[in-house]
Length: 162
Image (cartoon, rainbow, N blue to C red; front, side, top):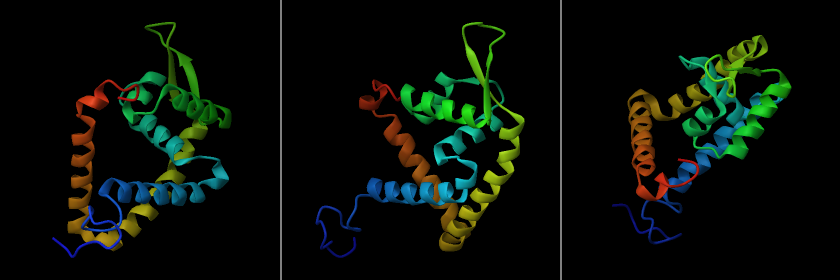
């Protein structure tokens, strides 16, 4: 255990709880990515949707995206509408269920993935330089395990964003 924290004695390792520290990292990562992609009018959340659509082995609908990211319906609708307006995605009618709209990348959406990859590699290089290869893998695994542990809490299972 480290020395007693002067900022807040309940958190012995720093002024912020771990979740808060991860939130700060997330916020700065978002700002970095959005600054790099500003000429393309893409937010980090939109970027993540584009990557997910590209990597998915099957067609996704809006509900799939909501479940995958834990966003609420209104947020997903706004993100999808913006991506569609910019021409990165399009909605197509499902062959199986005519009421369902599937979301797929357009040619423009596929082209922007190269730019997105360059931005992510730039950010990853910075993280790798700071953490080093051994700590990088460990930190990623631990953060993932923390997220999975919180996701499984009963109080979250009933929430709209689960």
